[in-house]
Length: 90
Image (tube, rainbow, N blue to C red; front, side, top):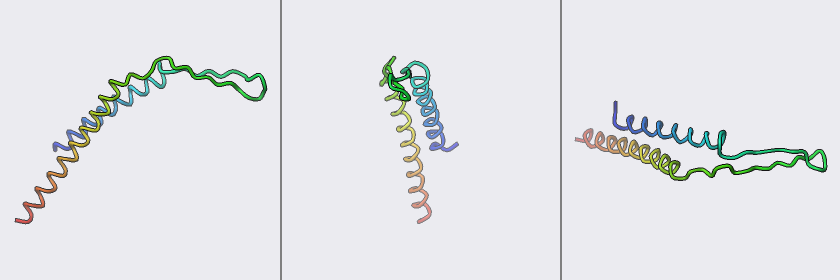
């Protein structure tokens, strides 16, 4: 397996972890939404309550890991492209 493929694979893994964190906050314990009839029908009163603010630290680390691994993959590809061109010229 090429180094850039390894880095992209790692970036995908971090992205899945990030998606799971966000999904858990959105669908499980981040906030609640309630809807009740408004005193003047046919309107409704919708309220949202923040149950737990998102924990920025793990999200920031996961985003950083995704970007770092994707950038590293690009660097491997760029380096390989340049060295191939140079070897083809000689």
